[in-house]
Image (tube, rainbow, N blue to C red; front, side, top):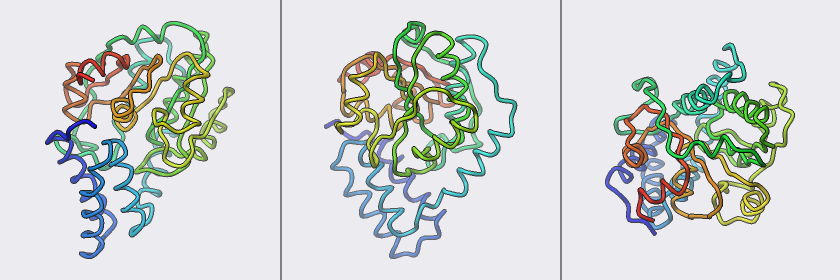
Length: 271
């Protein structure tokens, strides 16, 4: 298991402290959340973030349920259209990932503006075949659907996927289906069981990876899960650089968009 970096420890603790106070936790509830969070650090990093979030939900409920719907409505009120070019698709795909809640350190929603797109191995997306597109935050899903339609027009057979359980402001499977229907999505939509990411060693994730030529996964949690589990296969990760380790790995700055082929990210982390 990868050793925890100082920035990652601070991010994990800051995230759950932020959640606790957003949810008006009592001192006793805060102590439970922090104790569970520290205990979760024996797990792989992506799993620790999910496990500690469950502690928040256990005592405070799904504290971002209303906020993420409000942010989704803001996105849906915009003039959404399918990108005209590949570069525009990369920008739309990563800019939408700026939406977030509890990422701390240098990043907090509203404090950082979108920079540039840093692409390393993104040309893999110019090929054709079958693609699993794992979404991240709910407010960015409308952008993802526009980008997925762009890839369909390029010749990709695209399957959108999301987890069944809620995590911060991430889209659940049921929310993904709702937005996909609203925006006229004509491809497949699949569910990952419980809190399983597309890179976790659960049977459904493994089946989807094996049955498709490429995995395109959005967000920091999926990037961390890929580094944690190193599942193999062709993978491209796309995220807004909101933490130093995942920014520095590809020479990006906080606020930049990143599109990176998985093998390059593993090399950067010497895995």
